[in-house]
Image 1 (tube, rainbow over the protein chains, first blue to last red):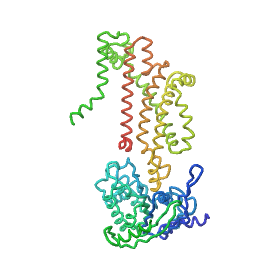
Image 2: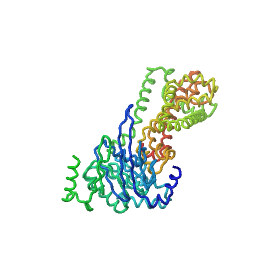
Image 3: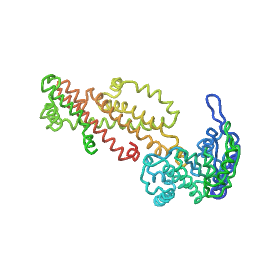
Image 4: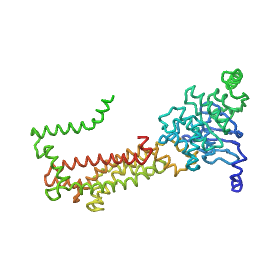
Length: 262
Length: 263
């Protein structure tokens, strides 16, 4: 056991070769007042490097729990998650989360929030250059000295994106990140995410309950059901990019999927 | 808009102004006799002598500086002990549920003991003077600082810790990088309450017969029937308390981003 653990941790392997995210027989049971509830039951999946996968399901199906397990904020009751064949045991900068709610540090400016995680790894002069670069990437250069309370919800999520992208994570975990935004801002943010993804090609796991959002973004959709939380189906989205929500192909696919969900 | 802002700045001076007017009225008209409440002008003269007078030219003349220095030292020492103990314990109990469970009952029980009932014990333990006063000040200032720090630390959103963890911030660094700044507004209220209470317990400690200090002067003046000096002492303690509160606020804002930006 110890031997194989050491082997897996070898940095060459972690850095180059094993970019996939895998879940094997994953389950999570919560104990509540003497009883227990199975939130996730026997979940399996593989996610390729650079893939954008949406986890779609009704509320209470355990999709946020799944994301927390991948992030390492909690440990599974059974099964395992591996990133590049390295087992996830705790949070780390290789798997960064964009939360649904505002999780910026309210006492730091936009630029300081973006620098927060990077400042222990980058030397001072590189840091400010990188911060500048990611500020531009999310279109917030003009707001770098603002505090979180002084900017809008959409802008906060841009900061949340920039502060994790600067760490160059292997996997980006997004927990309904645009759910609290108005329709127009949400579309803007989806487009921003897609253009960043095209440029940086991170692996993204995107949790949502919005079918339209999943069809707009995903290479592949993991469809979840609840009680207990399971992956019911895997659906590849073959639509060419960029996807237009007004196009006939989009509509057909959306309608078919919606019927399947009933 | 401009005009109302202008007036706004003077609002804090209205209650003391009104109070002073009423005081003039009751003492000048003789409604309250001078041996109970001397005339404000008389108090002003007494204050002047107490603060600026040549030492030994009159009773209490020029004693303000040594008295204030002695009191300030006692408050500073007691308050520092309280801060040094209350903030680490507050952080522990706010961050770790087991620590909270371990300490909260005992601390709440101790907290409900009135400070004055510690006085006899403190006198036996530490004798009359500096150490008793510092002990009382530290004891009294501890509770508000501890309770507010713990409450502030408990209310830090888990999302902030999770954000820190995924960006490589461990538990220990998280205390300095996340917990303390996030709990800063409540910690500052705790510190300010603690400092205010420090002045109250300073006087209690000094009432026991120490030779110098603002509380000692009040007690001494009562024995000698110098009601003017009692009032001067009370006013000066009020002023010192307010000034030290301003200083505390300024220092915190100067030293910590989170204090500047979140309060």
